Image (tube, rainbow, N blue to C red):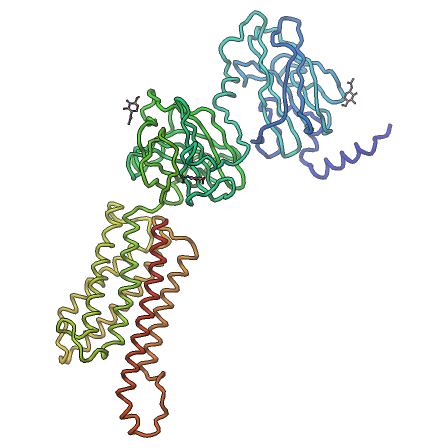
Length: 593
Ligand SMILES: *[C@@H]1O[C@H](CO)[C@@H](O)[C@H](O)[C@H]1NC(C)=O
Ligand SMILES: *[C@@H]1O[C@H](CO)[C@@H](O)[C@H](O)[C@H]1NC(C)=O
Ligand SMILES: *[C@@H]1O[C@H](CO)[C@@H](O)[C@H](O)[C@H]1NC(C)=O
C-alpha cells in the first residue's frame, strides 16, 4: 500500500511546522481528557467561533442513543476535536456515558477515565467540515448531560470546551438552569467584534474622551468611556491603550476615595470585568456579587475594550452608586499582573463637571491635571521664565540707560528690576503653596522637583532681604553684596530652570511630549542669545567707525551712545516680545491638558 502524495505532504508539514504537536495530530489526546485543553502553549481563542454542536433529540432513556453533530460554518474547517459528555450539575467530574462512531476514518474513540469510548477525537490533522457520533447514556441515574467540545482550527487557534446542547433524562423537566449552562450565560463574557464608535457621542450616548473628541475606531491611543441608559439599566463602554487594565470610577468629589469603580483587567489573553469599591487611596475591593450583565470584551493592537450593563439602582449593594445621581467621572489605566491591578500609571482623567449618568447624552471633557497644579505651573512659568530673566537683563545691561530720568525718585533700571523681582517672589510664593495644598503635604512621587523648588524658594526669599540690608553704594563692602546678590540670583535662576524642565514632565502636569520641551529649550536659547547680543554690544563689538581722528570720535560720542542705547532698547523689546510669545504657548498648553 502506498501513501498518496497529499498525505505525505501533510505528514511532512506537520513534522516540520508542528513538531511538538506531531504526536497529537493522530488524535490520541487522552492526557487532555479532563481539562480538554490542547497542549499548544496558547490560550483558548477569544474570537467568536464558527462551530455548532447539535443533537437529534433532547431527551434520553435507557438504551437510547443521541446523534451528536459538530459542524463548521461555511468556508471554515477544523483539524482536531475532542467531544465529551459531562454531568451538567458536575461538569468537572469527568466524561459520562460512551460514544460509538459513525465514520472511523475521521473519528476515533478514546478512553477517558475508566470508561472505554467516553470521548471522541480526530484521527488526523486533515481539514474537516463535519463530524457525527452517537452518544449512549450511562447506566447511572443522570438527570442532565451537556456536550462539551474542544475544536482545533489550526495549531495556534482553538476553542476549549465550547458548550454544546444539554439533554435530559426522559420524564425529567428541563428544570432550573444547571451550573455549567448558567455559568456559560451569565459570567462568561462575549467577545466584541470591533472597536467602539464615537459616532453616537452627544446624540445617543454620553462620551468622555481623551484626547478631546478622539475616535476609538481610528485612534488606538484614544481613552474612551461612553454610557447610554435604556429603561432601567445603563450600558457602559470603556476602551483605551494598555496591557494591564483600564478603569473608570463614579465619584462625588475630585479626590480618589469612596468611589464606585469598574475595572477591565487583562489576565493573559482574557479580560476580567469587575465592579469594585475604593476607600481612600487603597486597593479596590471587588464587589462580592456580580452585578454586571451583558459583559463583553476585546483585546487588539494593545487596546483593552470592555462593555457591560448595570441597573440604575442596585439596592442590595451599597457600594454601587445609583446612576440617577450626579458624579465626577474618573478614567484610569495602569499595569496588571496575573489579573491584579497596580497603581495607575498616569494621573486619572477627571471629568470637568459632575454628570447625571442617566441624564441626556453629552460630550464630556476632562483633564488629567488638577486646577491647583495648573496654577502652580502658570505662576512658576511667569515668574521664572519671563519675569526673572527680564529683571536680570535690565540689571545687567541697562544701568546706564535713561540717565536723566527718575521713576518715583529712583533710577529707572532699579525700579524696573525691583518691581519685576518682587513680582517674581510674590508669584513664586503663591505658586509654591499650591502643590502642598493639593497633596496635603509633601509630594513624595514627584522626585527631585520639590527639593529643587524649595531651594529656589529659599534663595528667592533671601534675595530681597539681602537687598534691603545692603550696604550703601559708597561703602567699601558694597562689592561683596553685589557679588552675592548676583551669584545667588543666577544660581536660583539655573535651579529654577531645571525644576521647570522636571515640572512639565510630572504626572500631575504632563505637557505634550517633545513639543513642550522644545518650547522650554527655545526659551533658554532666546534668553542666552539676548544676553550675548547685549554682552557683545557692551564690549563695543558692534561699534562702527574706524577711529580716524580723535576729534571725530569726541564729537560723535554722544551720538554713538544714543544710537547704542536705542539698539539695546530694541534688543530688549524683541527679547520681551519673544519671551511673552513662548510663555503664551506654554500657558495655552497647560490650559489644554
Ligand atoms: C468518512 O469520511 C471520509 C472523509 O471525510 C469520507 O471520504 C468517507 O466517505 C466517509 N465514510 C462514510 C462511510 O461516510
Ligand atoms: C459630540 O461628538 C461627536 C463625535 O465626535 C460629534 O459628532 C458631535 O457633533 C458632538 N456633539 C456636540 C454637541 O458637540
Ligand atoms: C435616585 O433614585 C432613588 C430611588 O428612586 C431616590 O431615592 C434618590 O433620591 C434619587 N437620587 C437623585 C439624586 O435623584
